[in-house]
Amino acid sequence: MARIPLLEKDQADPIMQELYERTEKGGFPVLNLFKAVAHSPKMGRDFLRLGTAILTKGDLDPILRELAILRIGYVNKAHYEFTQHVRIGKQVGVTDEQIQAVKDWKNSTIFTDEEKAILDYTDDVNLNIRASDEKFARIKDLFGDRVAVELTLTIAYYGAVSRILESLGVELEPGVKRED
Image 1 (cartoon, rainbow, N blue to C red):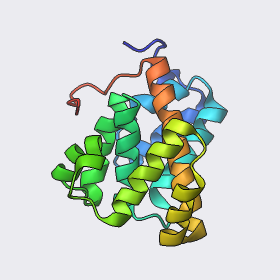
Image 2 (cartoon, helix red, strand yellow):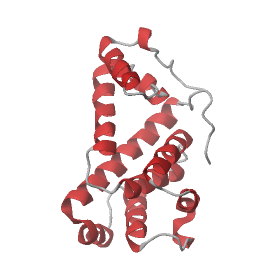
Image 3 (cartoon, helix red, strand yellow):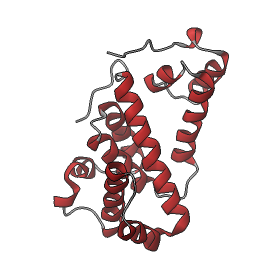
């Protein structure tokens, strides 16, 4: 159960009401994450804008991005995050086999060298904060500076999302089946 009330549109500050309306007009549901961060409207709005930019404006391949996010959700035991990104991952081409294998990727044979590098770097940043020189150099060599920065931003952002969701006790929306 959420540790704070999840704010519906009529309870939210006008800043967040506008975000809710844009989300709904775009054909998307207002997620419980939005309703939780609505308690801090200015920070919440900008926090969610960064998430939208990560999902829509980067050069990082969407499949690689989603593999990294799924790995973060799984490692951090952030079931909400993992579940939401199973859906998003499938939309961009992540397979069911990859979704299951991301949990124990080191013992899987289905990932390409690039995907393994992404997952290895994700684990290093997520668990150790500072990636090793070797793992960073591998990402930079494979993808260049821009994608190295975007991947690092993605890992940091979704690490923060995990911490927010779990610390605030945000649960999945009604009718959404939890993925494990």
